[in-house]
Image (cartoon, rainbow, N blue to C red; front, side):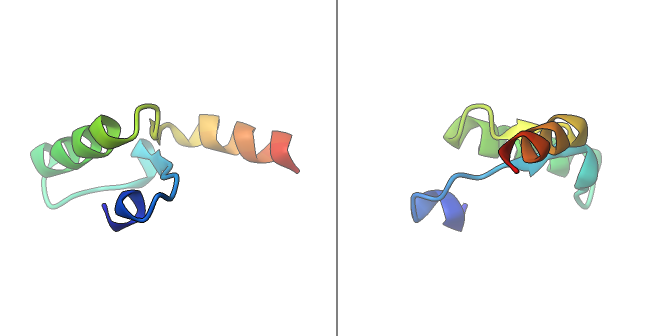
Length: 54
């Protein structure tokens, strides 16, 4: 959440992250998505974006 507080755009690859439990991970993803709509994506989508920007 520090990134959001410093006005940085956050992108989180859901399928490349884990938490201490499924419930904890889901809560973290929900919090990030609440603060920055569209920030939680799948790795495939993230890689597709990286290829386009090069």
